[in-house]
Figure 1 (cartoon, rainbow, N blue to C red):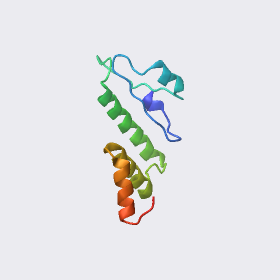
Figure 2: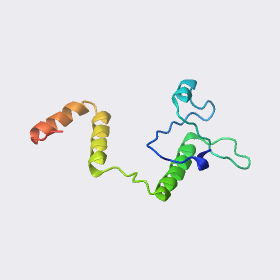
Figure 3: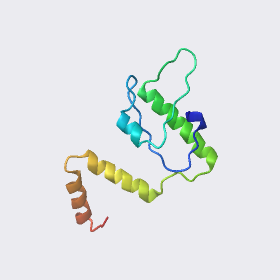
Figure 4: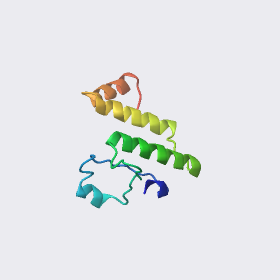
Length: 106
């Protein structure tokens, strides 16, 4: 169950559809599976609600744990660049031209 999960290392969360969940292949690759407790008449959450509950719960656990979970400024910038490059048509070429024009290396 999500409330019992202890974060000790980086994790990746995978959310499935409300009706079918995730595929057996994904479950086979998972080190662990978690469930969100439900009370009252609720039988399932839509994926955005489930993701929000998980993110909130895990963030609270991280804050209480004292684990240094925040990315360095350098890692944050690299992730933003990678996202931008992958989000644009010809992103790689545009970024490479920017680096050349500004005499920068990455």
